[in-house]
Image (cartoon, rainbow, N blue to C red; front, side, top):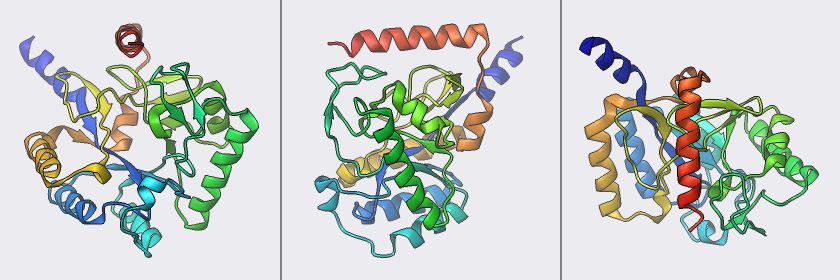
Length: 253
């Protein structure tokens, strides 16, 4: 019995490394260090690429004129390239009425379905021009509404790297891989993704991240493996519901 439980926990515990704000202008020295770290431990992260970055904060970073060549090189290494919005410009206030109750400003929440559809479509056109297939999405600042999900679905994107829960799940005929914490935390059970903003890191932040990777690399999984862990049975749905309700209540204050 103990062996069965240990095996079950081992097979259903893991974390997907999700890097946010990957763009032409970013902290390239630290990105290179992360790439070396990932390659050393055979880690296949998911990179949230801003296809048409207009964010002044990001634009203040070093520019890589060969950015799309680099993205294709990552893709060749089986890293998952995900759409992280379109311009990364926040032009709507959510007043914590966004789908996950994160609050703050948004690039998508509050806009019409037509405008959200167009932004996603324009972003996809850039990726297509650069010969990069997109299967997943996560919105800047975690802010969505039901029109966002509809617009994604109608642009043939069915996977969202966001949401609450201990296990990946399906809702609105879309797959969600939960993202729960602002720091790298590996729970004793469940499948989630991280949220890594290396553009705001210093050397100490990288060393902390490196320590986490070295300690937990055997539990770090790929995007495809996370998708295979989608489970909508009653037990998992109940756990996910409890986590969602609890965190939404906490984030109201």
